[in-house]
Amino acid sequence: MKKKNKIVILPLMIFTLTIGFLPINASAKTITDFENEINKFTKDLEEKEAKIAKNDAEVAEIKKRINEIESQIQKIEQEANELQEEIERSNQEIAEKSEQSKSLFQYLQVSEGENAYLEYVFGATSVTDMVYRMAIVEQLTEYNNQIMEELETLIKENQQRKEELSLKQEELNKLTKELEEEQERINAESSAIRDSMPSVEQQLKEAKANLTYYKNLGCGANEDIYDCQYRVEQSNDSGVSLPSVSGFSRPMENGYVTQNWSGYGGHLGIDLSNTNKTMPIYPIAEGIITRIYHDADDALCVAIRHNVGGRYIYSSYAHLSSYGNIYEGQYVTTNTHIGNMGNTGYSFGAHLHLEVATCHWTSGGGCSWKEYQKRTINPRQYVGFPSSLRTWWYGK
Image (cartoon, rainbow, N blue to C red; front, side, top):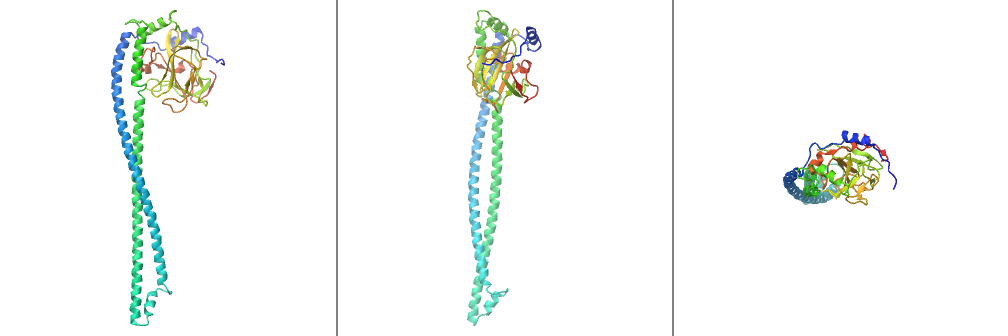
């Protein structure tokens, strides 16, 4: 594998980095503290579960309403189609009536001028013939008037049908808008639920695994679990001794930043992308893979523990399209291929979401998801990225 360029940090720089940049735990945490935290955390999660269940019920009701609206829309569309067919039939009938009326006038106007009726009547050779001719004129006139009345009626009915169709179309537009609003509400509800991710079950499972992990290390009830973890894991007989990092590298050979870190309550990491949507991903520093997992939205993720001047920090890599040939507990360097950039999970385009924190919410990370969010660090404190978004870098 091609050797990656690395930012080398001298021991003095590591010391400076540790003092100047690495957030040190403000207070120690003991197993007792952790147990109390999990008890409170469990109660909070139960309340959150109840809220999610309520949201699910509301979403189900919204979906039911959408199905009803869709049925109404289909019915209106069918009525509109039938009405349009009736209008087309009426238009054909109007055309036929108009042709009949035209033919009749042509028949009546057998001579020039406006006195064709009179000329026809007074052209009779006898009284009987005149009466006969007057009867014919009357019948023709009556028939013509009837045709004209029918024509006028059809025109009015046609106009009325057009107005009805217009009203139906307005109703359809109104229902369509209502449907769109309902869909937006569903999306908002889904986003609210998604924002609580990782899932309640996953958070509680990892919190309990965290507690078991520190108990299994043999940490005392009142001993700082972070000091205990570092002491035990760095002991010669632990088998997991982790050397201090010699430097930090970018996780991709080249790329650009699409979104910056904004901290607790905002974006917890930094997003990186590339025109190569399956760009190989590497650790930002030497470390041990602590977790390979899928989050609640099924994004592929990797968590790595690093030793920085005697304190652990964690880097997380999310939305991978695939994993490299890796396993939990593996020691990795900045040249270890841990996966490929992707678009898995709740994502709107292929990218790498990189997070750095002083603890991790999964087993062995020492904190809950709630605490983890507060203890994320701007990755720029350790890794050099262009200051502007969409500005390319080349080389790790």
